[in-house]
Image (tube, rainbow, N blue to C red; front, side, top):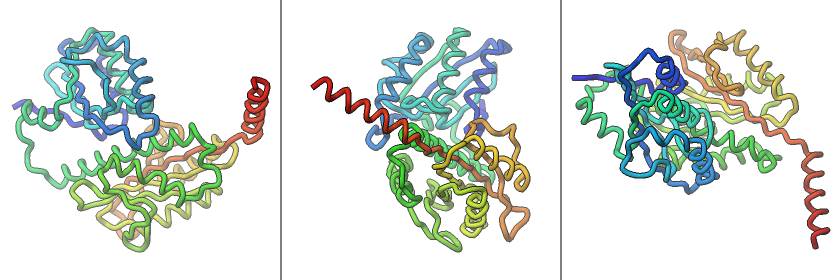
Length: 338
């Protein structure tokens, strides 16, 4: 029976597939999208994001064979692509309710298919059921498979935090004067919407309590996140040491979200990168987003055990002088109008 390659955990999967389609080396190509509708409640500017995404897609809708209109409802998007005799699939490849890295990848795929006149299909059918009908029942999970599923869930969590932190950077005034605990509480609600209540704050794990802990779907593992306000490279060093105390041997993934209220954000990123390259063998070629880093921590009691770590910097510095001027101008205009 035909099998498929699951590339869900490949960070830039949609972009790579778009490049292969645009490359012109394949003639037998099919493209499928499966839209898993989400509840817009609790997702900031969800419907506005859907509208913006739809506008970007207008010239690509012609490629789809569909029983109804596409992108009518906000949804997470799973994909399947056939290149000659090979199938590639990706769970949670992107979404259609904001314009971030994942959604832009979906747009790139649509654009590539439009450029090459590729037959494409969009459906709200359950992706897992389609896979089962198309490729048969999945084989019994191995230890390696279970780790891949955990990684898939971690990548989904990263995408959720990317959406949240991008929103924070668009509205930094709302986060002025807040500490880690305040921001954590604001983040936890939308995370629990996405992960069906599996997120916890100040959760006990090993030798301490971590800021955010999200259990895996099977409940057998957890993804741990620490939230910190940047106050120099010492903050990063302390956070990593703190994380190492929270991580059990069974943990495979963790994250750090660093909130920056200081000027010269570019220099902050450069300082962090230099530290990671010196002490954690950070590979710059694996960096796809300027304010994010991926590196591996060695478990403190097992030199052969490594934990995948995702570090995100969030720029919350505002130009208060400019904001005050704009506010004063707005007030002045309003008085004149009266």
